[in-house]
Length: 64
Image: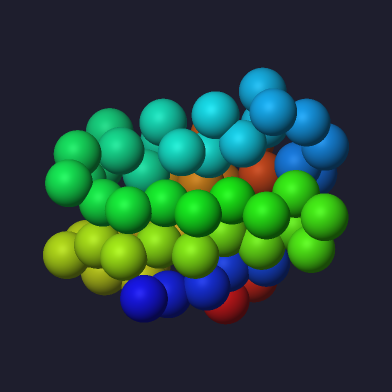
């Protein structure tokens, strides 16, 4: 599991956008978004770099 700090998430729509971005990269991924702590935990076969890029491409700032 990889946990990212994701800035810019403020609502359920943001959580869906981040989840969809990860799922496009790896449809089998498990994504747990916590808006209150601005964190996203991902279990995936994709690399950390690939996951970070997918979330950033969705418009969010990511820190591992």
